[in-house]
Length: 111
Length: 113
Image 1 (cartoon, chains in turn green, yellow):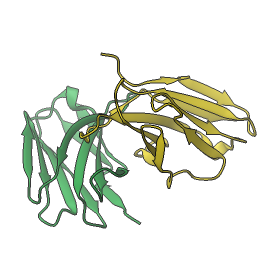
Image 2: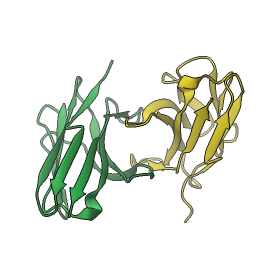
Image 3: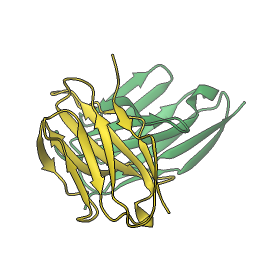
Image 4: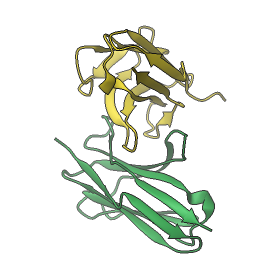
């Protein structure tokens, strides 16, 4: 079945540094979403990517969908303490079906 | 407006007990999803409703799990004869027709002793 893998599992970042988290699917995806979950909270939608090679930016966050639509990345520049949380990618193989979540990248920021 | 709400927020059950978890989606949201999230893991899909129709229940781990949404709004996830491995946070999410963004509720943390 479809598998979505995320690396790294943990990311320890100094405030002000950049980092990237990666998401890989065993199958071609129709779209991919990214969610953020703060400690003790619930997942909150960040963005959806649909097109091959698509790049979207939200302030300090840059999201990319691979050309083959099997991988994605999230790059955060100048990390802040407010970026603490777990970032999940979630892929779909059809337009409206179930989301397959990765295990997430837990981000810890040191001031 | 109000977001997705879930109740109870916390549930402790003895092994073998039945439990019922409730989800109130955002008003007007057609699609409703249930997920199970184990500690340190991502949400795992359980089942999906569009209005009152259960279109996908492929993620339900066993026949002890049952979900319904009889009037196309509130949904209930029922777990019969709970086992320790059922301990997890159960998340409900909904989205508007035509939009893929899912709005998650706060979850119900189920602990089976």
